[in-house]
Image (cartoon, rainbow, N blue to C red; front, side, top):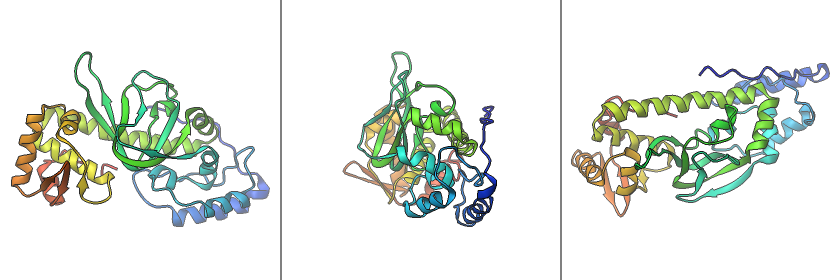
Length: 284
């Protein structure tokens, strides 16, 4: 992405070298594999942090977060964030960021998902990105900025953890491996938004709808998606009548069914085929 990581990295002190080696072996065998890999230099010694024995004990005691970024951080890096993280409920329509407004909190979503919506001058907004348990809000903070470029709000209710932007910035500056973990997600998010731009410009509405339903399904447990015509119209940037026609087309092919504001996915493989290459596997 052309964004370099910070050069400051604190090496493990000699008397902790054997403990750092043991931690590295533990993380190498236990860290989950995936697109966003927060593993790094586990021999890193953070100034002002507890000794490695205490850090390892805390890592074993804390529950694993469903959030992909947090769950893949090293014990040292999660130790930088953990004292400042707080659990939050994320109801539908809750705003997480406002366009051109200062970012006060960064959210690591653990259930549900948020939509990032760009607003044209005097025109209705259109969704440009989705953030679920694979990621985080506040990428502007990671890139060195303080204000959001777009509106971000919850579209499928869930929960997550949040941290003050100032505390995340402090932790980011102390750890190269934490910074790289967040940059990896920033790259994944950039790939998603690029695919969205291509789909919006080149694909039919049925293909775009199929892609979007697959992306939503990736981020929600179960096959039932709580989505309305009005919401889908905003997300796809088309009129509600166009959404209705596209939904009916997918229903005729027995790919989905609709009932009381919910969409039930009947044939995921069929939806992937219907997306006509616009859905990246995996997108998270």
